[in-house]
Image (cartoon, rainbow, N blue to C red; front, top):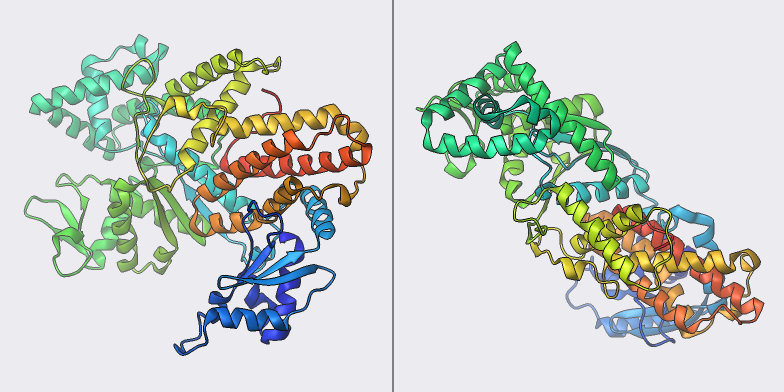
Length: 578
């Protein structure tokens, strides 16, 4: 890809350098767009050619670049060869560039950028992605929003690259919090409130019982006893737990539907309550389980008593812990799926937990622990609705929809819509996702409602607006013009900038596939939208000669197609009207 131009350049270089073209392809990159319309389209990094050369007396890189450029020749594809700082630059024949790029975008459709030679040696893998993972019997908190949208992006990207992806929602549906919740419900709960607004009522009960347990040790003891009964399989305790779990999942599924997200498997810590006992037996049989004075069981991961490497795997009363259940889940998934990679998407606060889980798997003899990967992310600050501090995801979604409806109503250009609520929610979600994905996932960021909903600037609203605007162009003029087109009609600087930018899409996808960071795609789509906005003003379709109008419409259709592809990878549903 980059429409085959990269390979043509690699083949010419391979003859001069006596290297296979495959070794050169990743050293050739599309040049980011610049205001200089005569800028090259591709550049070869001479540094990357020489980086394997350990001879420190190698000639000056600039001299090396000039010598290499002198040995190369222009042809029907490459119209100009020059040198830049530590690079050899290649300019593609302008008419060939126009024709090839637009043809490739339209022909490849949703696969544009994914058929690139950058991905040609990519083995197809089976990948498990565990994400979202809210705690059952608590309302879906915004803290789980980042895991949900980041995990969805990673799953979308891996799937687009041809991997077999299994999306798992590993619910926090076991543990001491259930002992607390059940005790709280027995003390302060009302059946009628549970039926009418289950998770709100359970949330209120949970807050109340936590306060009571902090002041009254007998409440904490009751909670511990209830969890013990759960672990032992007490029918009455399990029945109450099951009721809480079923009510929770019902609400989650409804919220995921609003987010446009699905899972292949709803799992949970409860699935591993028995298998976690097997894990404890296995650790004991390998001599890895150590009993403490307090009666708990720990694993010394370092083997030398380093306190920071001690991981508790069993309470003094014999009940399992989060880490034990994660070990059991990982072993079970390998047995079930035989995965090549398993990715856990959680906040950075769990970094040490996953390091310990992966190390324990390794010392238990599971070599495949190296295939497990934790993708950590930072904290969102300041995401509060108008109603107050405690923010649930559903409140945020409702607020997004309301604010977006108000914004759309105040804009004179807003079209009459069949379903304004649905459009408002899709545009609002785009705003939320772009705000979240613009920076490094590991960074904390401060959420700002007003900035999120700006229709200009680098926002999700701007992306949706650009997509809707380009769709409107096709609806208005499409019928008469979308047949063949004359490439000579697309040689203006604005057209060339867009074509050069479209060339880079595969590199952006490749970069995101390497580090699992969505910001590369976000930055690319925002630049594409800004280029389209400038072109929309200067490259008129109305009142232009048919040949010119047709060519421009092809260009705008290509922009819209790539914009939609990128948005869908990010988990955004593009809107056609707004």
